[in-house]
Length: 79
Image (cartoon, rainbow, N blue to C red; front, top):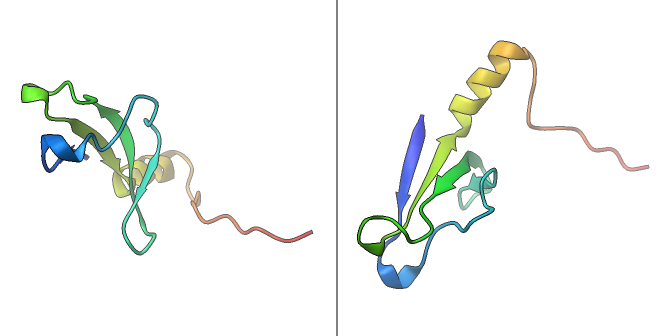
């Protein structure tokens, strides 16, 4: 599953820039929602930017199919 993220207006600027692919997207509460996969960088139709992102649920379903028990919450221990 992939989302198209459109900018609010030409004045708001692009959501992502070249090199942002693979960046995590989180909501205001810090919950992981997805990963940036590509974008037009302002080169979309009419100069409007569009960024594409894959849902973390979709990504993890693929990961779990190949690596059962994998998770994104590693435990960090102080030395």
